[in-house]
Image (tube, rainbow, N blue to C red; front, side):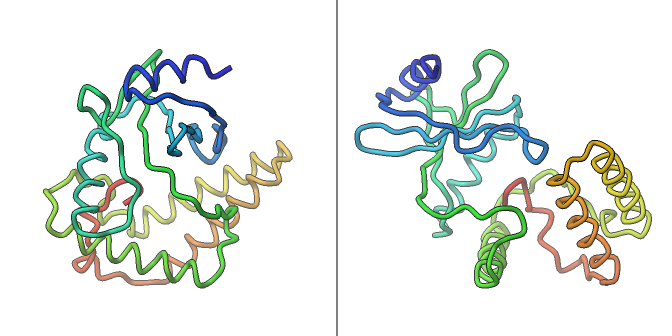
Amino acid sequence: MYNRLIRLIHQHFNIEIINIKIITSHSQYNDSKVYLIESVTKKYALKEMAPDNKLEDEGSLISFLLSKEVKVPKIYHTTAGHHTFTNNGLQYILYEFIEGTTFDLNTAPQWLLTKSAQTLGRIHNALTDYKQMLIEIGLEIFSEEELASETQFITDKIKKSIEENDIQLTAALNERLKHIKKISKVKFDCAKFTYVNTHGDF
C-alpha cells in the first residue's frame, strides 16, 4: 500500500523505512495528510499536501527558530539539499517526529492553553530578528466589516452543515463563531502586534 512512499523516501532522503501509518488524513478541517514514518533507528512525520512555494521558506524559518532555542520540529533536507520534494502533483516535507498527546478540537486543558500562548509569544519575539515576510493577514482582519463578513460566512456554513447533518462540523463552526463574537468586543492596538512576521503555523 505504501510502496510508492517507501521508494520516494529512500530516493530523496536515503532512509530505509520499516513501517508507515497515517496520523492525519484529509478532512474538512485540513487539506493535508501526515504519515508516521519509522526507520530502524528513528521516527519521522511526513506531510503530504498540494504544492505551495512557501514551504521552502518554512525550512528556513524553522532553522532560524531552532537557532534561537525555540523548540520546533526539525525539517530534514533531501539529498539534493531542499526542504521539500514533489511527486505526482503533491508536495512532501519530512519533519522530526515528536512524541506526545494530540488533543481533539477544543479539548485542550487550561495548562496547555497557557503554555501554547507562552510558546507563541516566544516565537513572535524570536521572529522580530527574522527577514521581512509577506503580510498575508493584515490589520483589516480586525475591522468591523471583516468581522461582519466572517460572521455571515460562518453562519451560512453552519446552515449548510445542519442541512447535511454534519454534527462534528456544525459544532466546530459554532465554536469558531463564538470566538469571532468575542473578538468583536475587543479593541486591539495593532501597532504592538508582530503579525508582520507571523506565518503559517508560526
